Length: 219
Image 1: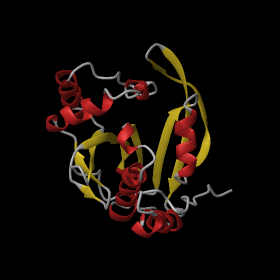
Image 2: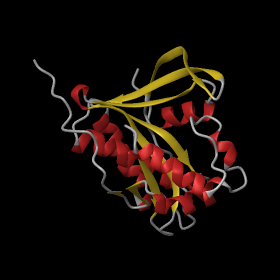
Image 3: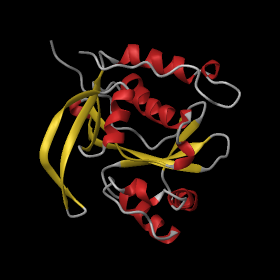
Image 4: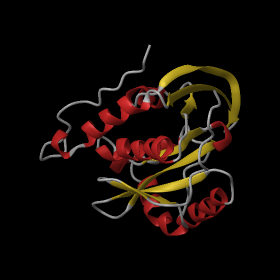
């Protein structure tokens, strides 16, 4: 039995949810993203990224130009309430012929912390990859020393697959890479749980969750 390729690479288009809207990243997002990156604690969140914390809006605009000229497809994460960009993420390792794709380059700014915004930003990527484009595999990778990222992957329902030792040299340091994935057979149950958790009924008047996201990697 033959296995189908994905329909295409993701196009440059908006993906809209209840809490966030994902827009192809452009220079017009630079001021908002710089403001988020320079909040107290913001620069430290670049510790595990390939890029450094931006030193100015102009520097960030140049970085946006550079990534838009490459093979990865970055989006700005827009808070629907404020209309401001509060983070970024990217489609990476885009292999339509193999129906495999990665979410990477993730910078979820402090205004997204402990809110539904980050979860919905991840969900919108996963739903578009699986349901709209027909991908079979959705990847998450991170530095093996990045414990918060590994914990987030498991919370989101990714399965841990192993460590690629001495996989990269990043900012002058050797990186062992932890690999995680969700595959298409796991997605329907995960999608239902994301939809349940993201429902307004799951949050109180202060925006606090009433129940946790109940995803667990299959054994």
